[in-house]
Length: 206
Image 1 (spheres, rainbow, N blue to C red):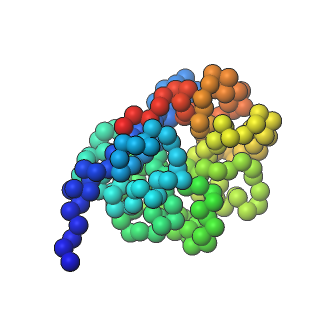
Image 2 (cartoon, rainbow, N blue to C red):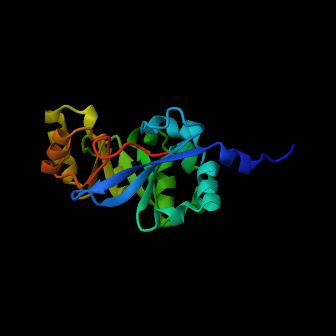
């Protein structure tokens, strides 16, 4: 069997980015979106990334397209899952510029946490999404992460306030995701979120 034409595969992958901003709306990073076509590329949906962007495609995009140089001093947040992280090729990603973003639900795979700890020891950083509370079972995951991302559009105001107070005890950097209005932005600022992302600031650019 002939090896697949990876250059052709790369030409068929569309890469989008959505900014992640600080409290003064200064740029601190981008969430990267890898899609096979331009369709459905304007919505940040971490649940579909693993199906459309494998580890080798992401790594080749960084290597062959020079994405590390594009992002310069800011971080590139990439949604990953257990399948992605268990591949050896992940270690080709530039650890100084990439943040591996994982949903807490992915840790149903019990082999994932040791693998993540192994990669962290090698210098990789993590953002944990899908956390809305703090309990004994979540602390090993929080310990792994530098950033905690909360989908503020999916929580009512009282639940968001409770979650923000609980997560503030972790001393991690809190990211408010899916911020879609000035009202949400101001609420998140008051609740102590450090970073912000969503349609209120910018839609993903392909």
